[in-house]
Length: 116
Image (tube, rainbow, N blue to C red):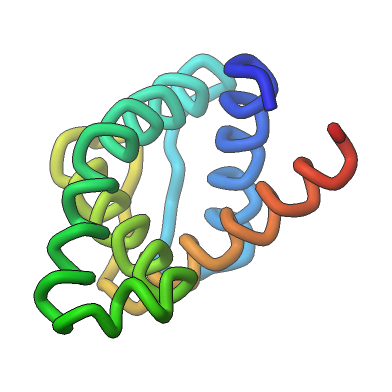
């Protein structure tokens, strides 16, 4: 997917997750939502891969075999980091972050199917 499409999908998936999950709030308007999605995207590219690698190595390779779960955990960690860096996103706990990561993953998969 192109960068713009990915950014829009991430923004929409964050919005949907915030509406579906009681422990997650996304404050502000559309510009604020796009800002949070951009911050998430940059951190996910930089830190998400490092966290995924740490999970894989820390589990002695099991994390690489269960890559889907490891990526969800890495995404949840990045969501909690974005929560700490901005007041525009609030994620109550790690369970909520994990469920939000799952919702975002499903949205990205659907967008990939539609876009391709």
